[in-house]
Length: 462
Ligand code: UDX
Ligand code: UDX
Image 1: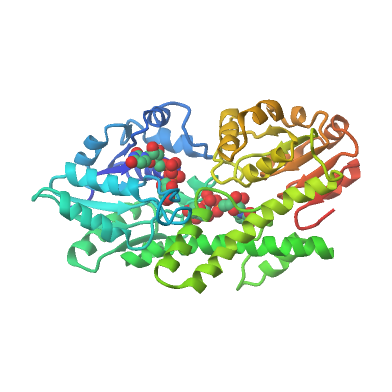
Image 2 (image 1 turned 30 degrees about the vertical axis):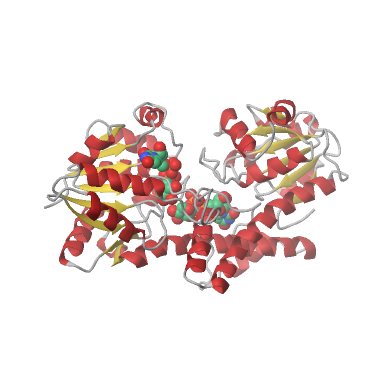
């Protein structure tokens, strides 16, 4: 029986966009996205979507109301679905065993319990959330122990590889779709049913099927390898600054080796986002759990280097500004964890701003997509007391307002609009000597120099 009705639990950065794309590409399938957060669902049903992604509005508009629905009626959505994606959050556990490393699976477990309670007949359950390897067997056990006699289930793993900011393009033409299932007749049929959905727009040879555990583990490993590349190039950025080499030139030179490849070699103030650190920690914890301490230590170093890179950048700023930023205004350009998203989860900007505030700098932050409340919340959660935020934090509506009377400017996100700033205007607005710290190599260091700025660029130095 082909799938006629899908539901997705979790209307976040992953669940919302992926279901919108499936609905847009499969007009014959009803797709319902359910979330317990009523505000988020209302936003998905409005003209102002809760997720900023280039091209997403058009995808949602093409299907919403036709075969794409957003609801808080989670039970109703489960009951009506033949296939259920589980895309609820799996944050790093903050308490008890494995605190700070293990994935917190309580939302996945409660989703499984609810599915068991509500379901009648046969349903396919698809893990979309990134989870530790072997989670499928936990879901199977919960479903088997809690469901009525007439309910049957197959559990699949189908990790999502989209990157924020390019989600629509990534989903239109993914490098691959990965589906893991059990080698039983029922498992194979479930895999085929999910393959048929993606085959509406993705060539079959790009749809890879594996066993459950390979699929679950591949997601963690893909993110670990990507993060490792960034830590590798960031480690070299420090060496470039010390030697006069230019990290972008080195990246181009090594990237032309087809065995290395050109992507993910952009030096930065460190990687952020909801996935890399969480998945690395998760991988480290898994290795420890399976008594592989040396493997765990190897991957732990990727996070260590990333933290070092963020702290190193702050140190550069403080040292250059004559060893004190106390009371000095620093303009911060960009707060999102990368360009083209309003997401700030684990943004390296949080770390940099927190440390500058601890040095008693006065920050004037401009980001084209992140709102003031989010910036304030993130810094409060990072441990900055409310009084310090009241006195030393200003959120600005444009970059020039942020730069006015600033001692220094720090670029923390690579927004395209930063490439076409009016540098003479910025220079005139700032106190002298006017310092620029470019943590993304997004500004032209040549032009900055020509305009009179004292410039530090990551991977190039002063
Ligand atoms: C999340 C996970 O963090 C990630 O590991 C996984 O790959 C996909 O799901 P994301 O979509 O970015 O990623 O998370 P988030 O934006 O927090 O969305 C999760 C949604 O699930 C939230 O809207 C939350 O309200 C909802 N949710 C959570 C439920 O509806 N029910 C729950 O029990 C828990
Ligand atoms: C990542 C994976 O790319 C994606 O496949 C997975 O599904 C989720 O996690 P995402 O975190 O959305 O996606 O964005 P990504 O483009 O991978 O960037 C992550 C971080 O690395 C950002 O802070 C980005 O600025 C940084 N980065 C990326 C670099 O510093 N240098 C690079 O060369 C690439």
